[in-house]
Amino acid sequence: MKKLIKKISILALIALPFVSCSSDDDSTTTPPVKNTIATIASNNADLSILVQALQKTDLVATLDGSQEFTVFAPTNASFTAFLQANGFANLDAVPTNVLKEILLNHVVAGELTASALNTGYVKTLAKGSASPTNTLSLFVNTGNGVVLNGGTSNNGGSVVTADVQASNGVVHVINGVLALPTIVNHAVANPNFSILVQALTREDQPDFAGILSGTANSPFTVFAPTNEAFVNLLAELNLSGLADVPQEVLENTLKYHVVTGANVLSTNLTAGNVTTFQGQDITIGLTGGAKITDANNRITNIIATDVQSSNGVIHAIDQVLLPAL
Image 1 (cartoon, rainbow, N blue to C red):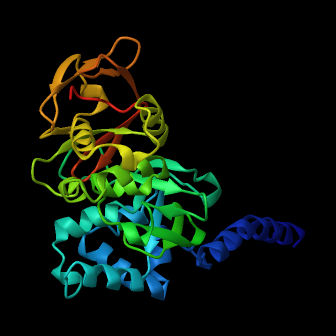
Image 2 (cartoon, rainbow, N blue to C red):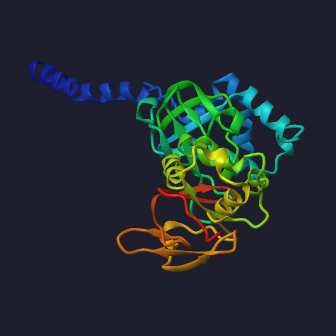
Image 3 (cartoon, helix red, strand yellow):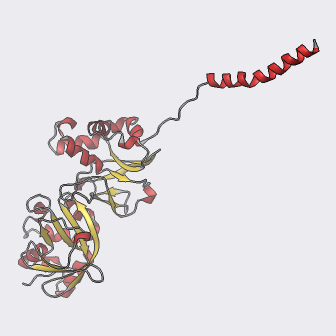
């Protein structure tokens, strides 16, 4: 009898682990809740048109994956205003390929919270027609909040809700749809080109804003003088202000900074003469950094490169180029 009891006890001890395992197998575990950028947009009623746009362009999977992105997400009101301003009856009226690039212009690779954003350029995932390789630049201005590409008056927008954290990046809700920027949009957006914009839009000048916003003679390569460069030019010419520059001199000078029919990136600059929109040549030199020699043998430094727009590229320079007049 004692032997029988002992055997039963041993069998019971052996069976216990199997009973425990069976209990674990019967239990269910709750999968973790996905909180991707795509999920955040889907759960926000004020981003419903954005979600429709992402679905139409097959971009939901991109923003639902593991790669980290920063997304500037336009509200429904922003999309409605964009559609009306561009003559589209609804979202379906926007060509899919156009809509896709517009959406990609709101996406930056990697996570950039509001505190990580600084005044300057970042690269979006969008491409314009000017370059098959250089993606579009986005100008971020953090001087007063976070303003993108100069704000809504310049086909840009401003952040109204920052740092909506996702499992694969961050979302910043904005009050405008970021249209694909032109050369002019980028010039207007950057405060350091404000005197250049004043010169381009002076009443006695050709419609430079229209020319550099369009596609005729595009793509453009523009060597853009900074505000300091213009101030130094006025001192050099003994002029008190931009208004004192004669009409013909200003027109020829502005045209002298533009090369038509080419989107020349910094990596593709070659030493030698280049004919400008004005008709005269500039000379590119690459020794000791990229430089430009104008018709008056004045040497100018290229100080910032490859600001990509939809119809051309901008390189900032530290001196105004002067043609032979």
